[in-house]
Length: 175
Image 1 (tube, rainbow, N blue to C red):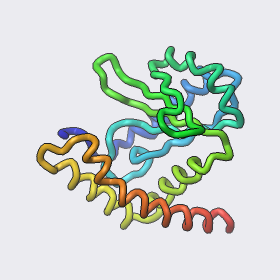
Image 2 (image 1 turned 45 degrees about the vertical axis):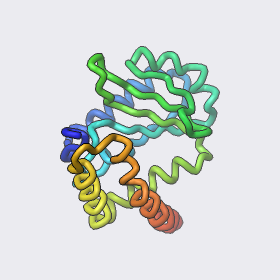
Image 3 (image 1 turned 180 degrees about the horizontal axis):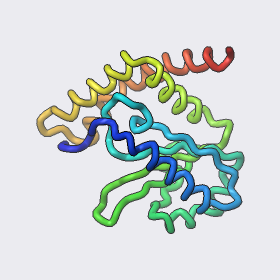
């Protein structure tokens, strides 16, 4: 599992910004708001070097009508890919390395708040971010660790933290 997770790279923000511009240009006519989510959006923690983007639209049918245009940017069109109400795209280089993941939801989806709350909570709570980073480091150091084992190993932490994050986020948004 060498290089599965790496130290935060300050260039990830610029990479997100460039990809955001490219996606908006590609999906002309689709009113989309894009957010940088996932571990690459959180300083101080280890992350797999894949930029996660969260897209928010008013109507997924507009995305569906323009989805094939994303192939021109190197994205695979994956449909809902196991999550109802989502459109998922992944960008993979010629050598098979995944570089970006785009998750698009309609503006009323609870997944939007869940993703944003988790990101903001870890940005604001350094101790929780550090614990998450330490967990990742422990998981990748396990001899013979698989990708599935790594993801499963994070599940309990993520589920518990999402609960705390949503409560915190909803309280902070009402101020």
